[in-house]
Amino acid sequence: MSVDALALGLVAIEDEEVRSAVAGGDFASLEDSDLSDEESALLKDAAAENPEVEGFDFSNSARYRAVDYARVNQDRMSPTVRSNFSANIQKNYGGSGGGAAYQSGDSNNCARG
Image 1 (cartoon, rainbow, N blue to C red):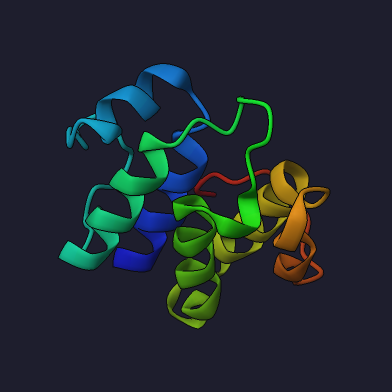
Image 2 (image 1 turned 45 degrees about the horizontal axis):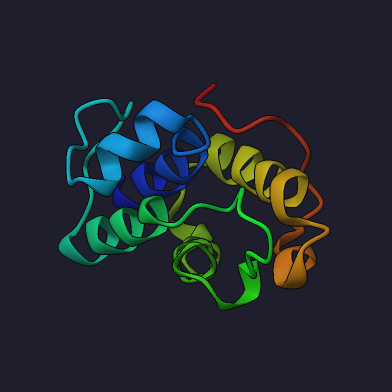
């Protein structure tokens, strides 16, 4: 599923090597790279950002747009990815701007199950 690939990719880009590759347009390191053109662009733009820099504003970022796209389309995700995606977003972004909006009540680490 394409939305699954985006959700898994958002988690994968937490790794610096994966983030660098995806920012350069190389999706080979992703577990699932079945992305639409729109999802590829969202993920690539999100990977190009560095959330580690002081002043990073998640609520006004490419990463936010990618997360929002995945959240809005989460009904198209497999149940396991949906559950894990929600928990990962809350863990990583819950305290920074709009992240709390991504709670769905599920809690696991994001990975295929």
